[in-house]
Length: 366
Image 1: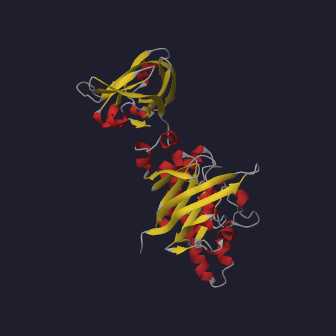
Image 2: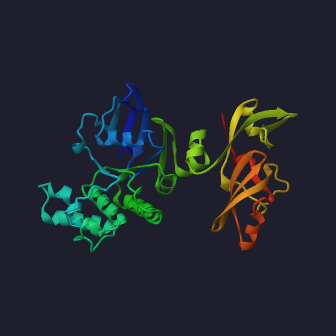
């Protein structure tokens, strides 16, 4: 079996605007998606992720380019003949049908299946979504999470090669959404179906995905495993959009053989790995959790630098405390580990503290 399930080649799509102009929704998108892979299209509203999903499903056509499933172009294949099912944001359950009728709707219009085979498929997906005993309930008798699982089961029961999910968790509260993230990944693993998941929520993308495709203005900004996207962003947009980071503008200079990052508020030494940026204006990126205080040995480590800052706000997050601090006019957000209640007192408002970081872990973007 070939590793590539879907290949998207030079996909382009434009829309006309009310003002008479055009918007490039997709710009030369090139992607491959593997069998049994959980891929997330991640980006802000208007970046093209839902448009890309619709072109795979057949609800939208491309202006140019090609989409292949198992090596065969599906550009001229109508949506109902593609080996693809979609789970929508609003679930789109039939309110007058029971859970069983909703789930088996696609099977009921397939006259080639006998009752025993339909029941076997239904019992399999009902077990997969953990809703045994709920088959006779109506949609209004279910919670939001249960409705979402019914929508998933209805999409899975026809055994599509690809399941497309358009922000299906956005209507759920935070705790239920976190639980459903785990369940969705489990369902994907057990069913063996490739999932293409659309979201603007970084937490969802990082927690569930085998691979994340970050989109910006109709183009792919970066793709990779969640840990690669988070710790090795290739550009300022990805660094800023994925998680939280501190972005500070400045200039890289060389003085007496030493490389420095400088701006009007502070400066610190860089390693020789950053010499390509000498005499260039850059943006310095460091994530809040990459700062630390006194819990890591610093003596004799040439890669550890520090800022002397003033605390202007603190926020308690259980084992961590988030502090907002400043050097002159520059604001930093730091997420620091705390060991006990007494430690919190070290970060009271207006206190002067030192925060440390490993220079080799920071990112610079031109």
